[in-house]
Length: 626
Image (tube, rainbow, N blue to C red; front, top):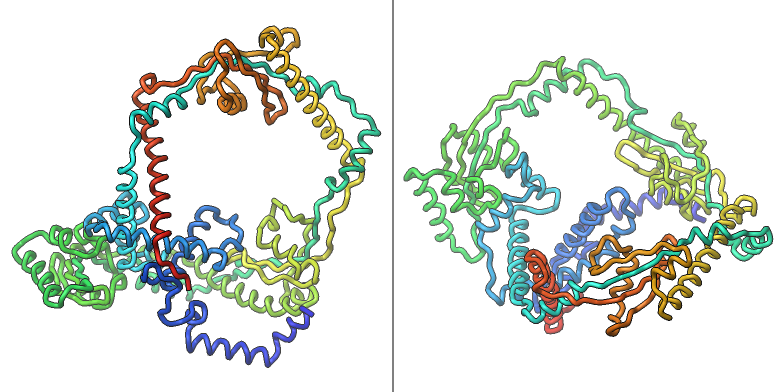
């Protein structure tokens, strides 16, 4: 049935339907279909709307965070919009509530504060200095304009004030610190002995009958890995590389001279004025006139830009925007820049971003290297560009051919490509080409594995594409007994040895509780023993398993002791005795330890009050998710 659908999708009727869909997208826009069109909101928080665009930006931010954390190992299904939308929506609702609360408290952030923070962000720096070019590029990559990023920064810093205020309103009293110090600084006198697993494991014998019985009972645990043998066609850009004609190299060299960094470049600074929503035209014009007057009186341009510019990215650096070769800025700005001499200041220039006063601070002429010096680089660029074009043309043809073909032989023959064959590939393959998660997912998909179709032509990188087909399927099967006999012996030995260690630990604990000393019992039984007086929770001499267990037990009564045991991950039993417990004291802590304790307790209390604050905002809010 799936094969019929594939064939029918290539017919005239299907193409007409696809054409109608394309026209619909072109006429109304994909966004109107995905987001519901218009300016309708997806939620309201106390009457304030959350737009579809805000929700999509929040989803995109989550995707970027996931990709940054997991890199190439990320499961593509984790980036599904539907999966992320609920979390993104709740995050937006919480942010709206916090911003509304901050507004009610009259919290605010000045433009100079925002500018200083932006200027210090490493993402916007080159060689330790703020770079206007990097600033604009990074914002574009993240889907922000300077204005929208400024608004986000203002909101984030306002919320930071709110959090700091809440955290600062909570503190630990001396009595609370003393109580915490009693617990944190507590010390315990410990004696313990070790019952090694190896002592019992070396004495265990496993009979053939034991092995056969274990195999019969646990045979489903001894399965071979499911695997497939694959046919595949692999396409790389390098496969389509061809010699480059000399004239093409010469033309590319000329274009590089014209369009490259060898043109005359001009360094400019500006003062940007953005009219506020509640600012009158007269007030806006007066701000511009005041700045012009200050410049005319001889004040330094950088000083006026720092004080008056609405561009938070450049104002911290005297309005510096870096270099332009005539294409970096809007056409109105570039025209004004071209007409200015070095150190000259323009009249106000209006663009979509606002009104600019521009100053040219430097011009530099670029000298291109000779053709022979650039030849290898240009030849490589041209060869790979042509190869990528041929690659993509072949990929598109292969997609059509492989979609309808029974296997890969016919598409490969038509395109003069090689069908390669893999060895067995399991679902957890870790080496070579088929360690790629996308290829593994395709090879073991229902459509390819069970229906017998060719996979899609899968992009591993812009220069690397692969299509696969299953040649042979090897389902998981129970392995024969000889193949797993050693593993069974090891399992039985380990299980019996651990049971014997557990029994020995119970017996040892019983003897110690009856009054025998750790030292006497260890010597009589041939075990190693240790003593650690005044061990605290951070002691690095006592095994961590003992500390984790011992500090959970109630202190022993005066003149008595507490005995217990734990089994380590390696299988050894650790039988210990707590002889004495000394509570900690705030006065016994070093100054740095007291500060650390105060910060820890304050942070815990601050987190509690922040959680209560957020919960209170949500409970009293009018939230409507549409």
